[in-house]
Every structure is written in C-alpha cells, then in structure tokens.
Image 1 (cartoon, rainbow, N blue to C red):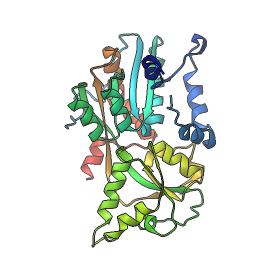
Image 2: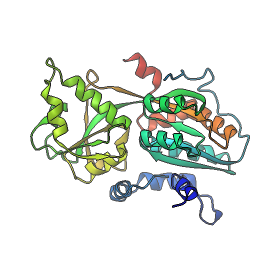
Image 3: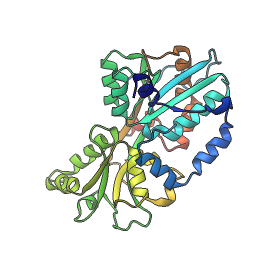
Image 4: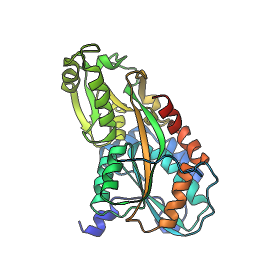
Length: 313
C-alpha cells in the first residue's frame, strides 16, 4: 500500500458518495439503532469507525464562535469517544456546509503513534494523559492540552451474566474467561491500576493479579472491541468505561459497577496539533468540545465533567 493510501486508511470520512450531504439527524438515529452484531463484527474485523494538562480555557462554556473557514478537519479521537464525537461532528458540520470532518477512532496509544509517525491530524483527543504527553513531548501540540471529560470503569458480562460475576473478586475465579484491552491502551492501564490496588494483603492478596491475568482469553486493540467480544458472548467478562455501554449494545450486556473506593477516574485531554492543515477550523472545533453544548453532548453519552471528577478524587 502506498504512503498516500496508508494515510487515507486512517480516516473514516463522514460523507463522500456523489457529493450528497447526508441528513445528520437521520444518520444519527440510524447509527444509534444499528444492530449489535453488525457493530461488533465491524470492530472485530479491525474497521476504524467513521506531561501537563491545562485547565479548561477561561471562555470554555461560551457560545461556539461563528464559522470562519471551509475545508477538511481531521480529528483523531479515542475509541470510547466514538458516539459523542460523532454527534459533535454533526453539530459542527450543520452550521458549516463546506466543512468535512474526518474522524479517526482507535485506541489512544495507536493514535499517538500514528501522529508521531507523521499522520496528518488537526486535533487529538486521548482517553488518558500519558498518550497526550507522548505527543506533546514530541513537539506536536500547538494549543492545549485541555481536560474536557471524565469516565469511570465498569465490569461487563453477556446479557444474563452466565458466569454469575458480581464484583472484581470474581474475575479471579477459576474458569472465568476474561477479555481486556492490550497493554498500553488507556482502558488497560486503568484496569491494571484497579487490579494492582486489589493485589495487596489487606485487599484480595498478592495472588489476585496472577489469577485475574491467568483468566485472560483475549486482549483487544481498543475498548470498543472488548465490548464487541462480550456482547457476542465470546467471554464471561470484560472491563470497559461506563460510557461504552451504549444503547445499541445495552440489551446484549449486563453492567456491573465498580465501587468508587477501588475505581479510578479516567481523564480525557484534547489538543490542537502542529501537523494539521486547518488551524482555524481546529480552533473552532476545540471551542465546541469545551463549550456548554459540548459538555451536554458528552454527558448524554455517559461522560462526566472534569471539575466534578477531580473534586471527588
């Protein structure tokens, strides 16, 4: 594959055929009611759907600025942001008919690597600060990063919970088939933090981690592929973000809360990149994400506010 084709493969273009702009609201409704099996099979096949962090800018929450440009805007975003960012894309494009937002959703570690290897991108939204720091340390951040969302982790099982999982301790039980993301992906880093915190004498004991990892039957490239595996009943349990139990898969899953005292807070940073081709559009999209309207969209898809997450730590 040529370098140009490889670069184009990074992107999920919002609308291209015959120059016809899609009906944004109709597309969103169809996407939300898509069947879980098509969703899961696409993810499992590897398709891409469609260190300091600064506080929010002082004008965060203000109205989105008037559109000032046209063209293409490329956004690299963590897989867990798929639904929220797709909605924000539609809002952004609805007032900018000459703009095409190109979304690339994947694990944050993969996105950070692509950016550092020269993939053209205007914005990077990561599911943790580690991958954003890697990009910033490479001198590739133009503005930011800013924290814009938070999340919590949950256990998921297939609908009906056939293995009778009720808490983190159960993930170490014999014959439990567990799915996690690959090491280095933020959801795996957060999962490992929880498991390590329980692997102490005054919790579940040093052998807990060995027993949990001994039950691993699959490690997926990103959190949405973990969801897909469990929704298809291919394992007994997985650990994902609370926001990943979306309406299109909720009927196929059982969601089990992890208590706050042993859970972790996932914080999401966003930044404008030096390698982008649309700096004005990037600034406008960042303003939308950080605005009250952006927060409302994120809350609709299960994300928490940053200030609340930090104050509860």
